[in-house]
Length: 229
Image (tube, rainbow, N blue to C red; front, side, top):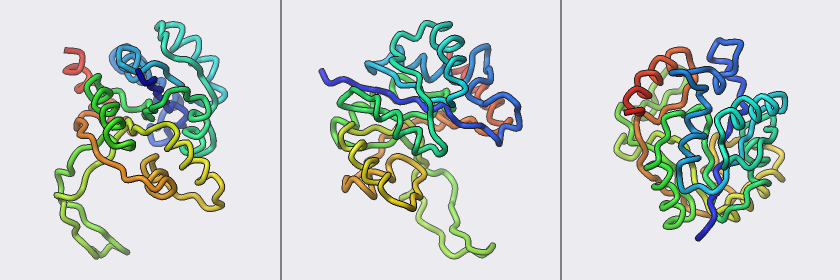
């Protein structure tokens, strides 16, 4: 059996949440937002979890999240970096599995099915991302003017987890980190640009949203009601 590592990112500051408390530690329905992702990975086929957080938050995460809720699969709690890709890179150094899933801790509505489908996607494609088809018409705009209307049938909203063969994503990250100018917004872009590997989509769930603003907290509460059932 191939070993699977999940890297859960919880190092963000959450500036758009307009709260003194970091969003990943805010409570929704009596549990920290971060708890929901860790709980799903704990119950899943994943073998180990690397939790990446702010250096100043490591003691809190170890005591108030991992120990308090008994997450046995959390192998390590480590410090992230200045940018998201730094945090992922740090997590990859600790990943022991043949396959790796990279997930935003601010997406609490991840499910067991999404995790299993992502693992199957890695085995089939080597690199895959969870996402859903765009519902709305999208406009490309420059200086307030519409310059292009792409066919929405070809557009998907990218979510997490994003899954890869560990050796593939590590090699791509190593190559990227040698560059002076880095402009990537997700891990799939790293593999696309530096790994020479096609990335495929695994269908996720529209509820698998990222909690970013105060309004998202309200939505998360509604979604987690049905999620719990």
